[in-house]
Length: 265
Length: 295
Image 1 (cartoon, one colour):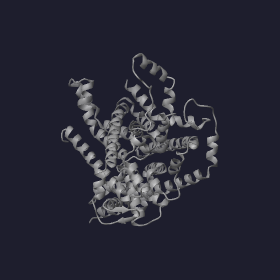
Image 2: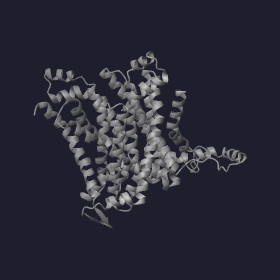
Image 3: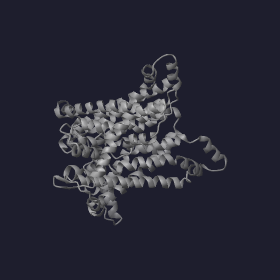
């Protein structure tokens, strides 16, 4: 009984995604059944669309920089959280983790108000990056907390006793041990930034990111099969990235000698 | 100040300063902004409660705000109720070595483009969409059955451009956010407690309601909040599948900022939404505490 329900639920979860390849290869601009023949012309159209390539480039730029900055900030915060005690710790971490539970429209509007009305800045990809670092950092911290928690402090102590400095200990002992966590945090932050729409919609200037560009395409029925083709490629890429992330996580657990308890994030 | 404290503070400083500058500052700014008014392009900086008065009395704002809250409430309850058995299955019925594979299967659909997932629901629910084109051959039968029963049936149709469409789509979009915290809470339950309950004469059903469910409560409350808070502010789903009767507060805030060019009103609506969400979230936590016996 329960098993049947769970399988039905999985079917519900996968229903929209299964449709993507069906309509990406369907030879009709009308997105409805019955299907009318196989074509690859929508994929060919992706290949020649200059605006799309520009938007993709913008998104990769934003996601690349945002994820690196978020993980650097996340490393500092997670390390401070797991290893040290200091006054105001709970309040500080509470504020840093707040974007996890704040509706994104609030982050978007508040940054828009400050950037445009108070400082008079021009919106650009950098305003999007600033906001994406803010929302990716809590995810990076959540992952890195787990990495630092499974790190045995006696290893660092041993390294310092054996004559390494604090800095070289961090580079030679700590960093390699938390590396799988760093890779996972980078991947998650990159994916979140790449997929984020509403903040980019508010804060992007004349350069659209990929989701903002897709949003503009959704208004033109003729282009919808092209969006389906694009979506199919994106799904394949994210499944590959997730598989890599999961493999990397298991490797990290094996290295730290912890039993796999399951649980992405 | 000892060495350890100093190191901790040095480490937390960069992320904290970043959050102060780009989160606390802007939130304060939007709060300030909500007391100003805008006349065409000039901003009047005399503090006034006019925006709040308008936000709370104007029937348009009131309708949309209340609709956002009830849609999110319905989404939250639907999602958590549907997610619980899945989390229970993975935690209690799946072999430990295969649990991460199951979680992986559950999370995969949610790392694919959010916009496209929502858009695909529009395709599924649309007038020419998947459900309707599947229903087309069945509908004459349903109408005929209706006539035989003496009822005026139009046949079945998918509910695009309605609050129901928003609820279905958001319940799908937030499913893993409900499954994961419930799963974590279920994993923490000491299985010996369940055996003890059985030994002491409870049956499977009473064990579930008197032991498993109360112990899973922290996860359920986390799931309720994790789904409710972001869905109130969701923009894409109501914009794509909601239609005029399914628009929510985020759409109104966006219109104020980018369409009507009345940023102070947008700021006020954002503040009101945040305050309402915070009150409901705190009330949920308090209620859960009371129900679980003041722990």
